[in-house]
Amino acid sequence: MSAVKQGEFSNTLIAYHPGVMTMWIAGLRTYFVDAGIDVHNLIHARWFLGVVVLFGIGFSGILLFYLFGQWEAITGIVFLVFSPFLLAQTRRVHTDALATIFLLLTVLLLLLYCKNGQKHRYLILSGITYGLAVLSKSYSLILVLWVPMCLFLFWNYRENRSRRFFTSIAELFCFLNCALLTFLVLWPVFWKPAFGLLAASLLGITILLLDTLKKQNEQKWKSIFLLITTSIVLVLVSTIATRAVWLIFDRVNWAVTTPHEVEHFFLGKILYDPGWLFYPLVLTIKSTPLMLPLALIGCILLWKHRKDSTEASQNLRIALALVAVAVLFIVCLSGTSKKFSRYLLPAFSMLEISAAIGFVQGIKWVYNILSRHFGTEGTIPHKYIVVVIACIGIFFVQVFPVLALHPYYGTYYNPCWKVTDIKKIITVGEGSGLDIAAHYLNEKPNAEQLVIQVSPLAAEFVYHYSQGFVYRSDRNRGYHPDYEVVYIRDVQIGRLPQTGTRHGELECKITINGIEHVWIYKMIRK
Picture (cartoon, one colour):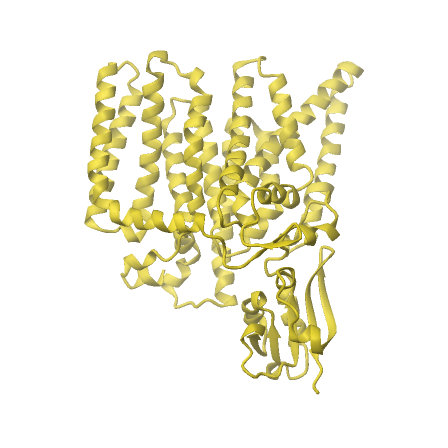
């Protein structure tokens, strides 16, 4: 945002993320105020991110209402709002929460378009939100593989059978054009005359394609001619952008093929690439206990009623399409070398929606069984009893355990796993508890004069909160620390023994959700 403020637009290409939407939303205050990267300003940046995510969840609820109904919409909002994994990432000034919300909106809008094929505004909005998703995080490109699959799922619902193939291709082009237009308009690195020409060409082609889609009786050869012309123009104009686009994809390729510089702890081993089992295990460990079972129940119950009506058949396809997004992300991300649990967040959002659908379908199924067993006279009371019991169960199983961890949602783990086993399986902690350690030391007499040695991955977190002098244990330049703060992630990847563990006295340990995250050692002077 500082580069935008100074008119140095080419300098906004600073990461493979690319993180452009985080720049616009979290950095908006920076444009008007000279704000640095400290706790105070990050709080404001996080507030902007939270507002956008909240509006995104609300919009998702509206789309769910049009796709399924009010109960699925309400349940979906509840499941998303109290999704611990999403909550944890929303509290970070980063890219994953934004990318997840924009991807969710993209999927729901495209499914709504497929269900109501004549309403092309859903197709346009879907393309725009997809552009926002790719601008947020590069892994959003995975969804390109899902879009043709989604259009194919609803192949049989095309009104004009003779134009099905062309219609699907034209829809795909419109979707990608809208996404690319959004990409060009919002990323300042493309604010050049050549890219303005590309954007104008894309806009004209998109308008022509939409006009052709609306005229279902148009002769087939004209449609094919338009498609060929579109392709030629796109290829010719895109050559202008080859250099910049290649630079971007080169960075994405580096991120995909290069392991992270900090090791993972996975299944008792210290690895740079934890392999194919990593994301499936993350899915089961970081999810709530009802998410996967309810998603499965929803698909099974919708499958049972798929022949009841056209709407029932469409509902099944929508549910399968949501699950397909989650599976696609798990498979594609597992094939990359750089792995973090937060990269799987889009799959969680799709499965939370699927779980909400399964919850409502499950209530209807139980209600129908009770109605057949007790007769029609008792249906109304039985209906309310089932709903109340189900809601109470959701609160105590899904909602309360999450709220109890406020604000350290990243420390939530599926209670089906033993807490003692979690730290033996995957890397634990995303800075959780380090602020508590800093505040603990700030309560000491003459806190400003304390010299605090901190394990490498914890130093930056403690630094922002501590009143004393903080330095990394691997960069000791003759300091004589009063205290040392040791973080669980450093311990897991073998960055021990450290000074405190060898020559200090354990004074305090910070435990969150049953796992010790931070140890504070008082140094013994000789």
